[in-house]
Length: 420
Image 1 (cartoon, rainbow, N blue to C red):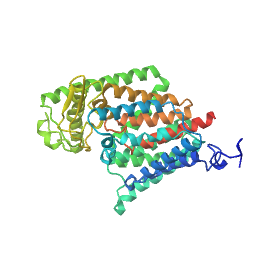
Image 2 (image 1 turned 30 degrees about the vertical axis):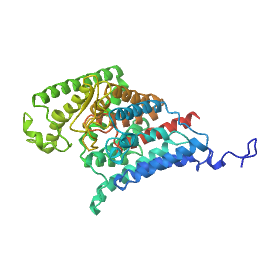
Image 3 (image 1 turned 90 degrees about the horizontal axis):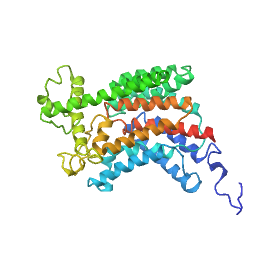
Image 4 (image 1 turned 90 degrees about the vertical axis):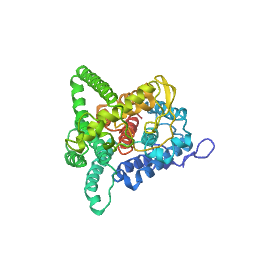
């Protein structure tokens, strides 16, 4: 025991931040690793338990151990984005309890769940090699579980995209680390993770990690050319969106009320959507119905959007000044309907303000990491998540965003510990 001027120790030496393996920070970081492991089977609802433990330990640090802040530069940007989302929901007529109701967290408000690791991680000592070993083991065990769990009647994931996104994040981290320190000791985990990702049949996840790795390598050799091609790619997407929106209007602006309810509007499409099969049909419906729906909602309130969680509230009741600032004041539904594109979904619900804050938030994460051994895995993980969000609403999904932000938070912990 070490006494202060009053003769009383403020806290036991074993709990002094960053001084012992049993410190609160060390336990919190271990719980974060446990979150990754329990995410192998999210249907068991163990990841939320790990998150609650992380929050409790962070509160102990802040209130009793004089260690209140992780000091991450992306935290203020994340806070601003969440505040805008919450305030827009209130402005649309929702009560605060409605925003955080179970059904809202289950579908719309899960962004508040997914970003918590960024706020609570960053203190204490942490070894990068420990994260390497942990992700290595989790991805192997996760792949085994993904194949064997269904054989005994247990399905750990509710959708193949959720499983694909989880393996995408872990695989992206391993590939990012291998691009810096080599593939020695990582080949088995990368091979098994790749096989698991292919087995999930999540096309968006597979394409996303390939795109993220390719862009990262390309941008390191030809940064200006890479940026130009990226801007050209974005311009092409916007042009395609406008063309799809005009065609959608010509079709009579058909609306679906469930993300899988495509057959009810198939007769309004210019061609047979499912002539080439169900999977190509769903792509066509996203391009010609869901994306134009989101763009139309954005145009009705381009500055601040129609209100957070309001994308799926139909029939739409626009209140305010349409085309400037207006909100959807319809009765909240909290269904599984979304734009199948994170950027369009956020644009519809939070407008230009939400998109700008989102990009500033992502940019702050990239800028927070200086050394290449930390920046490369962050770049590949976030790049994969961003590319995958072009075809799914993944930026807020707990099965993908939360593990990605766990990794970001632990890497920030590692960088902060190095500086100390």
